[in-house]
Length: 188
Length: 186
Image 1 (cartoon, rainbow over the protein chains, first blue to last red):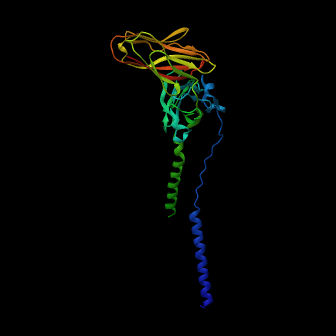
Image 2 (image 1 turned 60 degrees about the vertical axis):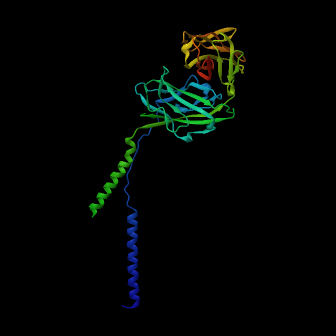
Image 3 (image 1 turned 90 degrees about the vertical axis):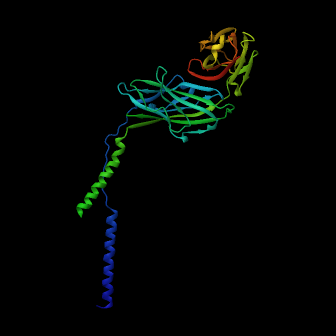
């Protein structure tokens, strides 16, 4: 065997090794198992539990969003060193005539309020039934995971949400805060 | 060998299936949001001012006060505080006792609003608070109402306290502000 043949033989061996390694690499990187999940006819339906206006919604500047799943308050206020109470800022109504639902209103995390928060003495949010009996616990705004706890809203029932706001003494009238609460409805 | 690989694939598939199905085994949640924006501080539209009888102290912002009177000096204190409406629209006001201390020594006392007409708000009789909440009383636009204490007697010496809310209600709805007034009776 001359030198040329030896070189040719080695080149072939190298080429075959290269091809084999490519096959191995490709095969090891491309073992797929396809699984499919198909959802047919994802439909839109009206929420059974919705925000509705209450006696004090206008005073609180409440705007209820389309479908009743969102509400914003744009004119809540308070005087320093006194407590402002919006007894019926908004209602939570179960429109289903047969099924009850578990609901939970909560102040989720510290980032859910902003602005001049050091000037706030307290903001409490409470849920009451039609006979003014408090349902669940009091939410302390600013305290992460402060919640009403899970409470059962019976069929065809409306409860009202009360806000209590107290600014510290000496707070200037330029001060403002924004607060976000989350309503979780289970089982709809 | 092939059976071994197939077995591993089955394990991986089962794991993936469990992972995918796990959330579905939890609750069906529907989340909506309640957003309160721009809760603002504003200048008080109703304020407390000192009276001409007894001793009164008005706290910062004129939204709370302490009144001191003596049951052994005089039976009538008219007036111990003024309620001043600084805006043109009206409110409804009333007093509610939310706490008290050592009241049983007070034989009689009546705390009332007046401005021409009178409205008895809190009544103590024979050491017992027989009326802890008064009826709503009109506070007209730019008007002043007065708080007086009448028929004040005590059976023994000591100090009694009444901790009272002055409720300032927006007419026709249930939005209100609460001022704290402390009555100290010696």
